[in-house]
Image 1 (spheres, rainbow, N blue to C red):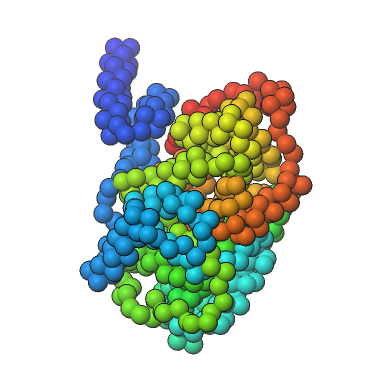
Image 2: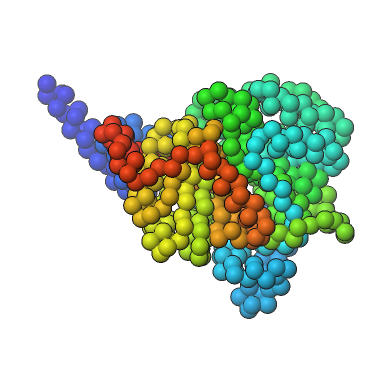
Length: 484
């Protein structure tokens, strides 16, 4: 028995030392520190191995690099816009946009998210229309197709897209396909065989160097971007798979929001793709005019002012935390929020509370169905915290809600890949479009009101009736929510 007592003592001391290591390495995030200490408490030693895989900090690492010419061009545009915004000399095609000068400046100065105003936006809310439109644009491509998705599946939709891309590659069109190694972990090399033979190029983001073990498993490229001929861009929530067409019986109709963009904003999407591609691929894209064509004169435009905001775990600042906080604080009448996962940071939770207690109409829509149970239970916990402040919550039951949309006062909106949870805010590589355009915001609002027809409202009275089992699961999920 002495050896058992000795082994337990050694195990305890080693676990304490590992816990101190976690405390030192996670100095900047108290919530994450406590979550990892909980893991170490319940899973000694092994918990630290999980931390090494899931908890490494990429903050401030220089992952992305532009060539000198492109860097100089970018900095010139950013410097000019920053100075114009600061001095009040920025020319707005729509005077309403000046109301959001502070938000625009925040993302110009900290995120290099330059503002473009000559853009058109088309909104897709179902996968059939989105992918039908995308296929038409792929078939019409003349110069290049840059495609990037978090999840790509080898099913009917996946095969349909890769066959279309293969055909374009055979025609001499430059085609690059970037996917996330974790999100598309079931994808085999055979999926790309004909595509590569035809001259297409593919790359995996943060691939595993060791089979079945990826030490960067916690950092995922969650972006969904397509750029065609440098003139048309797609971005939003849809991945590539049959379920996004509503063909998975478990979820039924898949409700998402995706954008087709034209105008100068496509340059920002192109820049983001090239940065991600050059990080993931051994064959770098050389920046030239064909990828950034001049906008044709006389082209139709809704003149939608847009900023493309990108964030990732390598950044010094959590851009979407700051952006969403600023949007909430700028609201005067309404905040409409749709997200499949609602795990906000405390500052964001307080901002929504303050808005509701100040008389602002705050409405949050999350799915009634769960694709990740712990995340769903944690979402319900945080929603319950807001119901007490007067926030209205709706559970979407018509299918599965995957849209990531925030609309402020029916005047400006954010649509993209970033969920309202800590994973998107701190861990994933994400991209959103901030649109300062009343007509576009009103369209998104109309969709929100229509979605409410497929929802059940979760009142505070109903929430308080939940069972002890659900209360327990919510509490456990809340404790580990910073690392979900």
